Length: 89
Image (cartoon, rainbow, N blue to C red; front, side, top):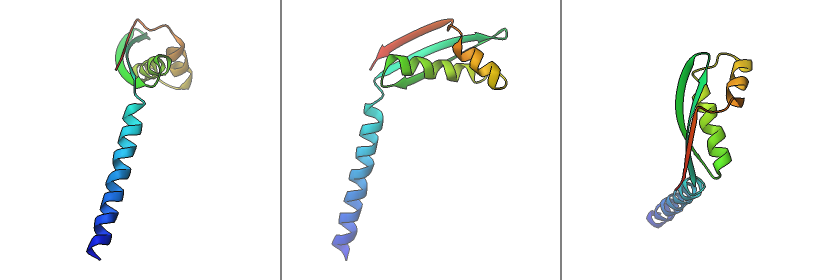
């Protein structure tokens, strides 16, 4: 009975380790984007597997506090960022 619990604990630990490795391993690019919308400015950082994904995610996050409603959110996300910097991890 004791060895069964040990094996189960090892399997769970291995699964958690694999999930962490696969999730964090995919985050290869980090971008910081600053958006300006409706007279306000906000910056946000995001990580993703590609530069395009990280830049889009950072812009979406930066627009989160600037836009109200779906139409404004879409307009803000589609606008050019005030500044964008990306680095590969």
